[in-house]
Length: 509
Ligand code: ADP
Ligand code: MG
Image (cartoon, rainbow, N blue to C red; front, top):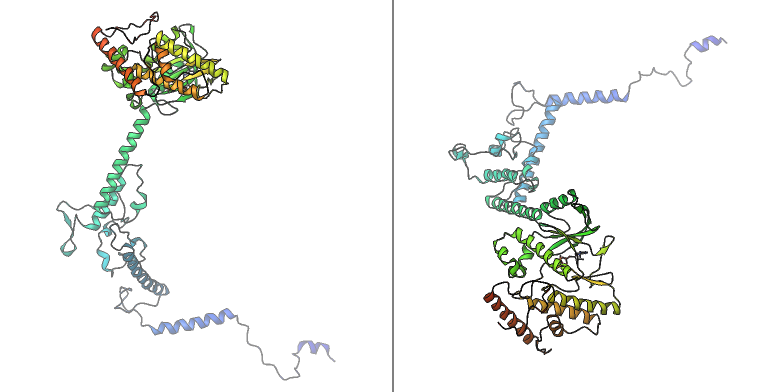
């Protein structure tokens, strides 16, 4: 058997002869051929567009469907129109009768300049369609008062135009007024709404200006106004003070700071001092006018001074009163220097820690009894030797330091001849008496006995009848007032050598 013949000849199939196979063809080719045929058929289904310049969008004309792109655009346009119609319906429903309306124009698919069919083409803002809602350029009405022609006339009162102009004007509101996103939308604000917004904006601006001003000119909580701050810096710069530390107290009438003393003309100050800054807001002091304007020492000056200077007078008054107390050796802060409305005095306390107020001091019964007798003695000294009534004496204005009671806060202290001096003293006596009695000091006198002891007067005491006691005090004040009127203001000269009490119950006129 010829082996080579076997390999070269096509083997004969025992099942019969095999037809030669068709050349292989990919599925993609088959598909694209089918597609081509289909497209060709579709092509023939539409007549061809004869005029090349004809409007492809005109419905009267037979559209050119030869281009897939054109076809797609036409379908898209139809779809967009339907979408826009729906959007307009929604816009109408959303706005209802509201005075402030929101336009959905921005969301339309077919913009008026593309859609010549739209009956709403005529809207005015087409003129500014680059940015129809631009706030800076609201459409202006010509001088003649209207724009447009025939039935398309729009006057300056046109609701839509006015609304848009109002919205644009919001841009001119003060920067701190937040007008929100309204400027970017086609908001139409009615005149009424715009006017109330404008009014609100002005009121807010004024209010904030007022607040700001108040803050700048007052000695604010924990801080001081710029003028005072400058004065304080100057005190450090000039060497009067080493440095100013924290704030010890902020009261209604003053702010008290701790500071380290420097020196003045080679004379050293105490190491620890306080700065009592009298507040430059006058409201609180107005209530206290009667403490100063009826004090003959300050009467004449008071009437001539402006409010800022009156504040300085308070500081000066405290300084004078402290000086008198020092002379009588009553434990009290020592005046270091007075600069305008800042009084620098020695610090009662140690290592930055101020002495506690009597109200806060934790005292045993023995110390309390001690404190009581000290206060009693001080009150007598104040009246008899210093010719003063504290006029705000209470456990709040007495400090407990080194086993002693120290008197502070004497800016409002007056002389007993003050038209209300004895009433003030009676109030002081009540505070002292109540405090020590409450603390369980058995020796503490009642208010009437304390008053008589301090003054040396012998006003009859009927503990059931406070009104009668006060009436007696007022009568005494009146008699003294008449006396002062007759003899002039220096009837009771202020000298610490004065031995007798300044007021006598039976003083003959
Ligand atoms: P105000 O008129 O505000 O009551 P004060 O003179 O009573 O002013 O001072 C307020 C507070 O500051 C006091 O209660 C006291 O705690 C503290 N203070 C005032 N002066 C001194 C001082 N010299 N040393 C230590 N603390 C003081
Ligand atoms: Mg006080």
